[in-house]
Length: 433
Image (cartoon, rainbow, N blue to C red; front, side):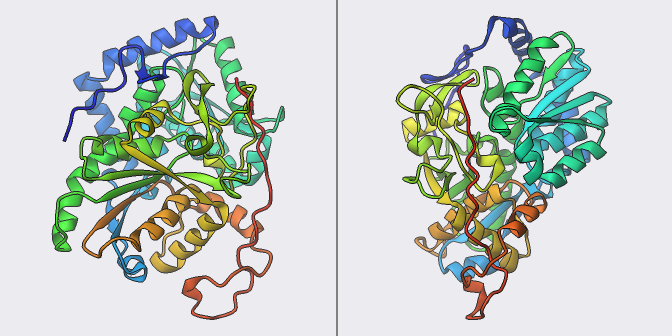
């Protein structure tokens, strides 16, 4: 094991991170930094945070051995960290609770957030209902259509959902509108960012709140591996999907010192890494500044953000958290791509093999985990962060299931009607803010 101390005092992960913001937000960011510095090690704050995770979220989430899937792959033993079993159905609630607790202590009664897949919006609406805070969620009009179950959940919880009709009507536009709101209402408003991106201290703060995922795994995995008579104490590889990267950083960060454990982030390769229709910032991007921090982004030769595409709304983003950029550069983490079709195959396989309906975001990590397991020995272990459940994606999958497709391995030679069709092209136009 080795020491890992990131970021520095100014929020830099090597050359990445930092705080690239307008003058109008300087006061708000400085206020947030001071508040987080005050409370991040405060015993009462941490006690309340742990209480909420245990009694409201339902932590610790279990680690599950996917015995049937492992046997079918014929290689490594596959384990899932079941973040889908959290209250609200994803990892997002871990971070939202921490930020909402800060908002209360800072005297900010009005909460704003932006969301793509809707899970962050649902988590934010949930905790605002819990704490009696006003909640406004910005969401691109196109994402409102493809994530309608989550939109209704937010409204049930008392949130105001604002469909953003400008630009490409997706996540970039929702974020831009949230930023405009924050500038206008900075005195009474707290902006809850859902991923490990944005200006410092957001990448560090969100990582810290989400690190409970990996910390639990460090405790849970030795017992599970011992029960299965597997050598070692920790998995040989830890996998997670990467859009902005919060669920991946949540499970990766506690494992960074464990050099014998590979860390593998799985990006959305869309229609292929060479198709131009993907969201693989780390594999096909270059360093630049986006949404308040320096990181890998998808941009053209003129520095303009290029179109992205993924079947998964939560991975459909042209940048990534700066700590992921740093881990890539120093070689501590690996980043690979999984296509829409591969993710859909994994989605169906998971449903029919393990009885779990995963989010389409998570399905990318599952797909690569299935491929990787085949190359490893049965006495080795892969741990996949099952970051969210797939209720929100059933409409998307159903819309794509209007034609015969392929026969999945689990079909055992049967002809399948109503299989998954070729993903409809839904390019998302994103520009640098």
